[in-house]
Length: 546
Image 1 (spheres, helix red, strand yellow):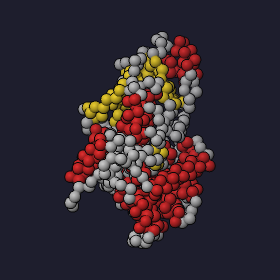
Image 2 (cartoon, helix red, strand yellow; image 1 turned 120 degrees about the vertical axis):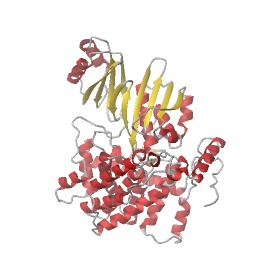
Image 3 (tube, one colour; image 1 turned 30 degrees about the horizontal axis):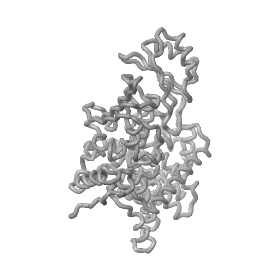
Image 4 (spheres, helix red, strand yellow; image 1 turned 90 degrees about the vertical axis):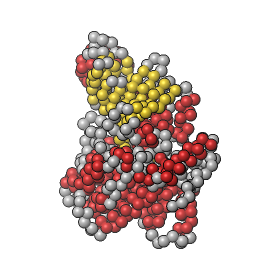
């Protein structure tokens, strides 16, 4: 379910954000929504009413999957990788803000909808926004005005009673703005100015006096929350896999190079800037892997640190011979444990599926003795496949099930591995299609409302699937169904899935007796511990029996 009409960016929508927390569509997206809400209140947030629709996913997942943590961190003005995020609920309360969370019958169309009513002694505002997957958001209402904002511009909002079109025409002529939009409701008019910077007060004062018969009631400025900004007349060379192949015209340009061409046009960046930015992400990922291998501790999770034992057994030769795949599995486990301990990870394409693609690329590249630039190129190739998925569909498990997360990660990783092997463009695309075909219909059913089980296994499965499909494609196996048709099929299957199987904690493994018992134990342990996430609480005891 793609809600944005903007061209997808590899760094905005696919590889990123760099973040902490169990879920990008919960934590990182909520943080970005909170940042925009904070700007709407000029940083002075005293009272917040958060409302979640009873029919959506958030009433059952907002606490355990990081929505509260992210939203409160955003209201405090923090970054998605801020080390204080796990403690944001307490720190927001200590800042003097009063927060209430309620479940309501709102009938919201999107399952990840946030309704925020914010106030202080001087002003009151309402903001409604949705998390669209992978940390991406859309603000769809400010006060009573329908809008469509994605956090990719400096936005100046101007409230007035009437004459909005007249003032907007003056702004279009006098201001260096990409777009000047007028929204109307029974409450008056709202002008939204999207630009590379904010409108200054002097310009607004002069135009407000000359262009409107009624005074400007209020002005607020919302800073961008995405790393790659948008601009006027923004385009990309292609938006689907079929269009990319037509653009290539049989030249067999490497997929990573086409990704660079795509992102340079989308973000108005240089080729070196695109590659350098991905190398920075590779270094963050390698540091996270190292932290996972060193061992992690965190109180509010199901699984203990298991990566160390796998590494010991691997080094001792006690595991079955999986070749480089064993190294990939080790790295998947390390990244998943870092995520679950609130360490820094990269949503690629989501936090729930953060490990399959990076572990496959870095593990295999190390086995092939390749450097970080070659790893970055493989991730760029993966990112381009991800743009086709994001443009046509979604990464949100609440919309598409785990086929939208794990399936997308496998598809992207398969193309990346073919790139590492020096395969052709068509082989990379074939691998991507085969990998996604293998995971169509995969549900999302996190045990005890934590993104750990069966998420660890699904990330391992996605990485192994990617490796197998990459090798089949390198041997010129026929995918039969083109990638675009495979993506369309996954989207159609998602629409046929019961809501309970799409990350609501209401189906699958999430409602087994063991899962429900673990959820209660985690709640008890959290109340018994110090609340700092240090690991001091009592250990979760897995229920006995089969």
